[in-house]
Length: 333
Image 1 (cartoon, helix red, strand yellow):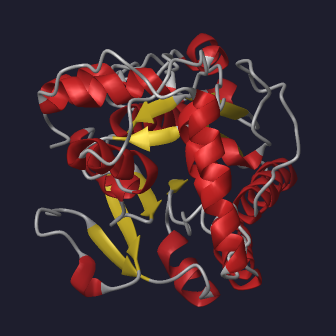
Image 2: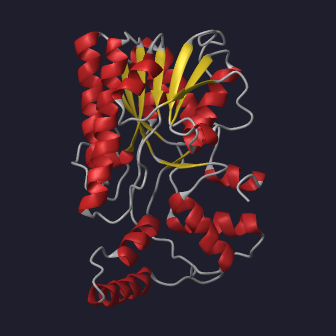
């Protein structure tokens, strides 16, 4: 990691969402670099057994008083907490929850950080804060409006992060993360691995699409760089592993890691989309209106490609993982 060895030594860093997939890795990475870590957690019983030396702050993004206590004396906040069900059906209830947690919760945390005169605030956002790109890779100049309640909440949180940063002189940074993988991952990639393992997924065709991913360890690298480097102040960066993948590449990489032979044939994309439309049509008749089958197929054969060159050039970020290397280690099994 490029960050100076002693930069975080004895700095008091608050990690929100510290018992989650990313937050837990962040807390441990900071401890390895000599930081004094305070972890914001909602339930004391969720505290990992190996958290020796981690200070616990019981609180919630909905509780302003608990956030004020958590931020007291803090030098740096790395905000990893949130409601991460980005692809859940866009019901009014879920949309409201996204806004309450991902937007308003961040607003409250920023208020607490500003009042406590925190010096640095790194917000772990998502590429969903902008609309998915056309069939090409895009950089931070891509500014299409977000298409989901999750994305809109994240975009609003990003705007407030930079706004508060300007108002109070806070070193504030947004990191738009691609889909994160690593040991303990959940959601889409975990479901893809399970589908391949159980033989549920037909052989995918090569469509030339590209989708960006990033390993959780490289997310930690980006977060520490964003906190440490003055050049990051007031910026929003895309964070990927630098190696976009087609749906078929992901499918074949997982099969190889499982010890399965690569199929010599593939189902044409037109057939797969036809089946998805038929499935969604049947679901429509039963009252389901979210076109779930097509959305799932789009996540395999559609484009979601992002260029993280800027964070490399400005902060020295250099990802150490690719999805292929990760699968080859066997850590995901």
